[in-house]
Length: 155
Image 1: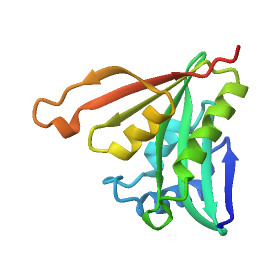
Image 2: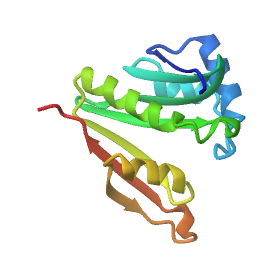
Image 3: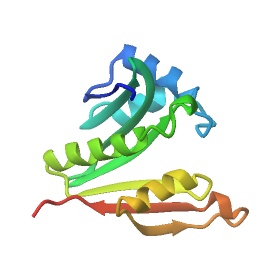
């Protein structure tokens, strides 16, 4: 059994920016590596959650999200390095993000994905995310964008 740890951070630092950029280069689905500008634009000056997943002390994945509206948290981007897949990291990161967002008072999590990412789409559907919108790409079915949401309001 592997030792898995998830670290949660709520502020983007220069060191963290470098870590995320380097990690994004190891995730084949991210065909454009993150840039410091993109990270700052999405995560600075707003409520955000930066999750880092470690396996046996080695950085293996991440999940990034931020406040989109008053009670809406947007799950922006995430990924797991190929060598560390099939360990449940994506599920663990998703659950952590949902729990954190709910405790912060968010009522809804929104996320976007594409048909080209079936593993992500399956993960979201398995976790009761509902498709709320489809933006068709006239050139390619695989590039259709799917918008999904999940209510995380507690009773």
